[in-house]
Length: 445
Image 1: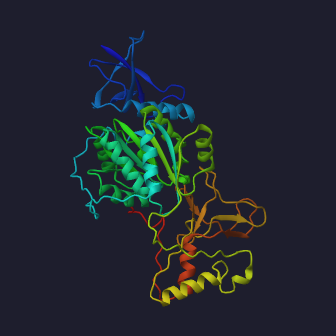
Image 2: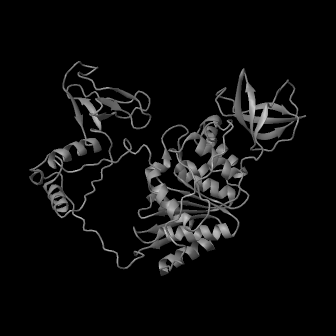
Image 3: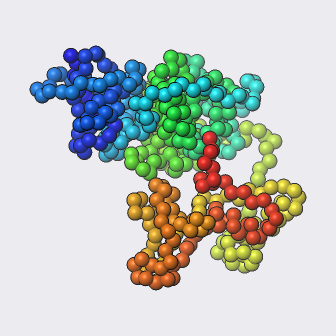
């Protein structure tokens, strides 16, 4: 009879992260098992073997996965729990797929067909230098500072090829789901069976992708947003974080963590390379790289010399003389849209706020509508006549009077994509106005 410390994936006691169970068969740290907690059957992760305790123990019910989690992933989970002061059970809920204890019907994998031929890329001098620098780095981070269009993706692909040729797996992180499919297309033209994982997949699909990585016998390439860092690949040799400056690499819900910091710990544990790619690197990353002597590679020129640079015109929104035709859309912008559509072309308008207005407040007492869970301002969605939290999804009706002082002077401030859509429809009647944001892109890959 063997005895093991097992960490359940549910918080049982705040000051206890693991419990001792017995097993008639030998187990390895990282194996996922089913344990009895009270009257419930919960999945848990074996942490380590211990001696026979002085008290009676319950037996491990069954083994869910015979293949254990990679040692570096188990170490990362324990580091996240310690460093961010989060219960290990909450960390394991992030590391493991939902429904890990369920038996799934195996679905045939639909591998996206590559739209590119596998041709040899001719690298620029800057790209060649970047590839050589990454190749010469044994372990640790490399900061890839490349302007837009400088060919950072080609450098990623070449670095991944070298890692796979050496028998090591590759994890590629992107800041948002919308960019995942683009990078998958690029990597699929060079690698077979790229593992794709993101939150818009069904629970079953994510579980299947996770098991595919766990049971892989050779080096693989996994691509996805922040959570793809926890893909259970056995031998990780390269971690790439594209657009590393993006704030979406920080998780705002428990367990709160920075994917950049977690990736550096994972790279150190797995003795892997970490490439942080960005056109505008974070000052903190630049400072750390400079102080610690880590390589900083600069791609200062576009990979294609014939690329046409965009014409940028800044509009001073404090000068109201430039807003005679609309209160927040400048005359310059409206004129540019008019000339564009008159020529038979399309116009793209970008904005970084969803909904109709960013804040709702009382002009009399200063009360502001905030989420009762996240304590952030609730965004107005005028088409639904509701206020919504864009972090946890909490909603409530739009108040007709202030809940604090009773005043009816409740106003909505800020601009959102729904408001812009509504105003453009008024300015350009008869034109097709399509909005694409987190409220419409429910099927984005």
